[in-house]
Amino acid sequence: MAQPKYQQIADRLRAQINNGALRPGERLPSEPDLAAEYDASRNTVRLAIALLTNQGLVATHQGLGTFVLRPARPFTALLSRVQAAPHEQHVSAALPVVSQADESEMVRLLVETGPASPSVAEKLGVAEGDSVVIRRSQHFIGEVPWQLINSYYPSDIAKGTPLEQAGPIDAGTIELLAKLGYPQQGFVDEIGARMPNGREFDFFKLASGTPVIVVNRTSYSSDQPVRLTRYIYRGDRVRLLHVEGNVPEGSRNG
Image (tube, rainbow, N blue to C red):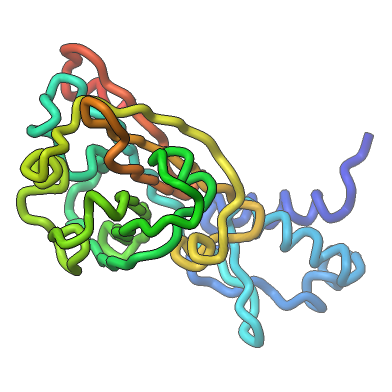
């Protein structure tokens, strides 16, 4: 069975992108020009462009045209360090493993107080609408946005502490919680995928149809949940890695 015309056009444009005939940053021919070249209607051409957009190969800018995107640079997120005691764990415990470590990570941090959503309330064991402290951070490697982290703390734990204050916590939140009387004894991870909300769509500069991966990590003291952290990644550029036991360092790259 012959492929639909729009798929044939998309395949030919994709081949030109893959072989370098159309280079990153280069503008595709206009819709009328593509329609003439492939003897197709403009609606058929739009379907082909939409397919390439959903595959992350091109992006259309209103009034300027459609441009070839630079190939995605994948990142690996290390979910946990099971050999480390809680007080020795990294503040995020979700670290990038980057093949070309020539660009440093940049973080932007926002701290706010808001009502607990149903999902946050369930994880933290508080009532829906109860006040929680939210520490939101945006993570970039070079200029590439690669991770969002949203950490939620019950107000009765965070109120009047550095968790409410803007700026990084030098010793890390795990050590701070321990000093406040809530030493972390363990955590539970739940991993899923969904379509992005508006904030996530804008941050990652996503094409339509691209999902995000969400890791919900609920951290516990000996008798209660003390923090919910949501690690959010764009689903087409990040793989999640869990390491357990004594594994050679090079094996972590798959």
